[in-house]
Structure formats: C-alpha cells, structure tokens
Image (cartoon, rainbow, N blue to C red; front, side):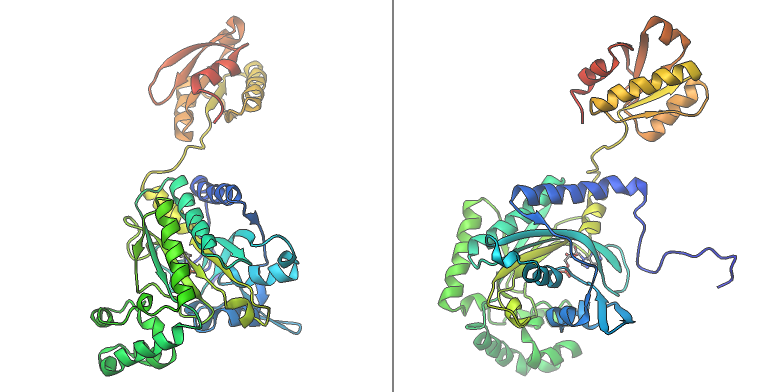
Length: 425
Ligand code: AMP
C-alpha cells in the first residue's frame, strides 16, 4: 500500500463514534441494570482463551469450525480470540471457585466476540454480546428466569415488537432415539436435501431442522417433533417451563425447528426475535440449557443455562425505531466576554452538581451563532450571558425546540432549571 493512502479499519469491524455511543450505552447499561436486578453479577473473562477450550465447546459450529480467529502461536500455547462467551465463563466458574459459592452462580458479561464471517448489516467480525449464564442448578425455573431477564432487557431499552421462540431438545436419555426417528424420516428424502444437509443427515440430523436453505424447507413439515418423544424427566421439565411462562404472562411461540447442534445442549432452547426492522439478521438473543457442557470439558456433572445477545443489532434497531434516549446537554451556556465566562463556569458547576448536563461555549461569536451551536448539540436550553445579564442578575433562558423564553435569575439558576426540567435526568 503506498504510504500516502490512509489506512482504514480492518474489514468487518467498526468504530463506535461519539454520535452512536448514547444508543450503545442505552443497550449496555440497560443490560447491566436488568441483570443486576435479577441478582446476576458481572464477570469479565479474557478475549483470548486457549484454542482447545474454544474448540471443545464449539466444535462443529460455524463460529469455531470456519470463523475462528486463531492467534499466531506465542510460546507454547495455541490461542484463539473468543467467538462466544460461555466457554470462558464456565472455565472461570471453576478456576475462580464460583462453584463453591451459592448456586446457581448468576453471571453476566458484556464484551467483544470475534468471528471471521462475511460482513453484512447486523453481522460483523468484531461484535459485542451481552451474555448471561446461570450455572449450577438444573431446575426449569432457572430457564424461565433467564428468559424473563432477556425479555425484560429488550423491553426496558425500548423494544415492543418482539417474539419469543421456544423449544426443547430433550437430553441424552431421549434424544438418541429421536435422532434415529429423524434419520429414518429423512433418509428416503436425501436426494432432495442440499449437500450440507445430506452430510448432516447421519452425523448431526438435528441441524436439518434449523437449515435455512429454501429447498430443504418443505421437507421439514412431516419430520417427527421431539416434543412428542421426550423422556419423562424432560417432559415434566418442559411442562414446568411452559406453566411458569404462562403464569408470568410471557407469550411465546413453540418452534419445533429451534435446535442447537451440539450434544451438550439439553432441553430448553429459545430465541428473542425482532418482528420488524432487522430483515434477515433479526435474532436479538439466543440461548439454551447446556447440562452436558461441563462434563464434556472434563469437569463434574454441573448444569447450566444462558443466552447471548448482540449489542450492535439492538443498537441498530433502537436507532431505526427512533428509540434513542436523549443524553444531550440540558443547558448550553454562551458567555459573550471574559467576565461572563467566569460566571458561566460557576453556573455550569452548580447545574452539574444538581445532575444537569451542561456545556459552556468557548467560542466567541454573536448570540445568533451561539444559539445555532446549542441547537446543533441538541441542547434543551440555551443561555446567552452578556454584560446586561450579569448586572441585572436576570436572563432569558431559551427552550430551543419550542422557542419559549423563560425568565430566570442567575443567583437561583440551578433551582429554576431544575424546576423547568422536573429534576435531573
Ligand atoms: P450466537 O452466539 O451465534 O447464538 O449469537 C447470539 C447473538 O449474537 C445473535 O442473536 C446476534 O444478536 C449476535 N451476533 C452473532 N453473530 C454476530 C455477528 N457476526 N455480528 C453481530 N452480531 C452477532
């Protein structure tokens, strides 16, 4: 590349510029707030993990088989950038002794994940996830708790067009027999399946159900449903999940095609979907129970359930729907000269102490330009401070949206603004 050409960001990754940060924080802070109210504690695990951990948790998923960012070998360890959070969180649960504390360990994590996927709207190579895990208790009541948490988050940040898709995929007692039924059903149809599904038919037939390729869709309709073939413990856990969701007034749509392709996943699987606005990438959060995972990793028999949700997708949707909550300055103060600048700083201090976001103009220009600037910043009020205002202790506070002029005193300014706004934001 010639030296004169500016170097751009790597393909598929993005800067979150200041203008996009408020929405981003809205999604993130909403996540942290809701998680904490549900009794979940934050955990931060490294972005790099040992390759083997990532591979064992994700073998046969695209995120690991095809899209993994491996880190060039340093020293003796093979490392990878995490494509999802569960592997690291489960590792830390044992390594950090959280398995010795009260169970379930209720954990949440917000951080970047990495997948070498084809970039498109709502799909990036570095993206942030809000991840929730409840480890150590197998009760179906925990399934409902995490589903409720995901839903509360999405509603709290401002979404209302949501659907909850729900399914169960049984466990190692009932699933093998069901998979045999599924193979028996699909074998005579093999020629009609697309090549990936032909291959999966013997090795991982559950994945045929979540295939999105058009030619495979009509074949699904006659496929046996796992909910008709659950063992007794899985059937009663499923009944409890549905009963508790009903009792909590949470609507859902049973989707027999919602599956997870890895053996360690058990029972409840779910997705929260945006019913408008995101097109093909409409899944906001997806999760499920993974009672077999810890054993697969060489640990004891410890159940767990969680979900992962994309922060970019949520921010994108909130922006499209105009759900951004204002984080603009409440007051913009424009002093016209040096003496006024000192007074402006005092007023700003008082406003900020009262919890009201305030910006002081450092540019010397006429009142008209100052008001334009206040408008461009999205401030709610503008105060132009001149000699006259200082002398009389009186000023006109302009409300930019409506053009209304409020008579205020400078000595009681913070209180008067607070009254106008109904308190700090
Ligand atoms: P997954 O871990 O694949 O089940 O994804 C969980 C959630 O993370 C999805 O529902 C998306 O909201 C988000 N997500 C997954 N992959 C990407 C990506 N490449 N770019 C942006 N968001 C993603």
